[in-house]
Length: 323
Image (cartoon, rainbow, N blue to C red; front, top):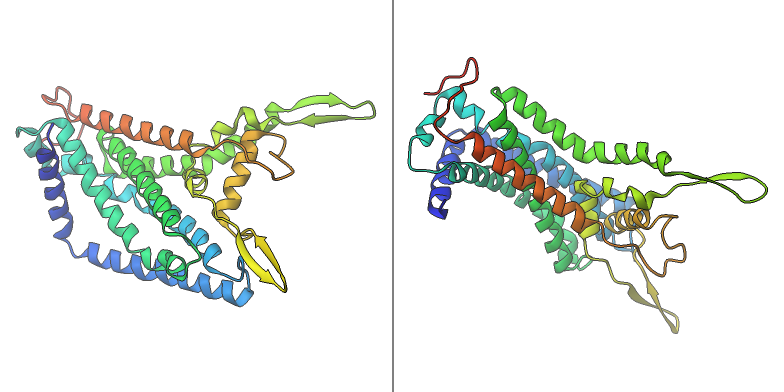
């Protein structure tokens, strides 16, 4: 497996995508809708005077970023959900398989093309995301970290969607399963956590009455793979800002940071008993475990795709032509 082979497949995939004008229209619509909604969100924050230190850029950055993450993960299955079985249905996959390209090169090349298309969609959201950075409300380091994490999570969904495309004969079915996987990560993990929480309760007697104590520290890992949790917890903390009130210098901490609030909530869940009630410390980070799980899932998906691309093919799915 060589980088040259991967690049050849990726370039061929990108050329195929660019032959249709629909991509240009879709990307243009994506740019206008996402940045338009970001601008409207900013105007709403300014009208409602909802800001940290009087800076609406902080809640704007977190809110827009979370919205962009969810939208991108919902769009991503369409990028790679039919990359393998779609070529099989058109009879063009065999053309690649009879060349000297290895299954790994074909799998990674197609993944790189789909991931690259998703990265272009992410770049088109930068105007609304970088506005708070230009204003100075958000540091460059924090913006860079969350964008890198968002790109990695997008790559995970691309890899999983491509694996479904390699496993299933019909592209409609593979895209459906890809969306179900995204739903399981976004909504299934918190639902499973909510159902499992009562099972961790222990009944205690304080002498006058009985009460149940829930131990969320035992099941916090159920939330770790959630992409929203990974992104929020990986975002670097915002530092306090010094303001002068009369003759005094007061340090204020951000109060309207969606990423920070979500991260503190998840770390409290890992610590159990509502975390540290005095606010003097926080529980351990959750995002390394969640990101490691997601990346391992992506690696397994790529391995499955490469396995399904091996030749000779002894069993052809019913109704699918080879060439």
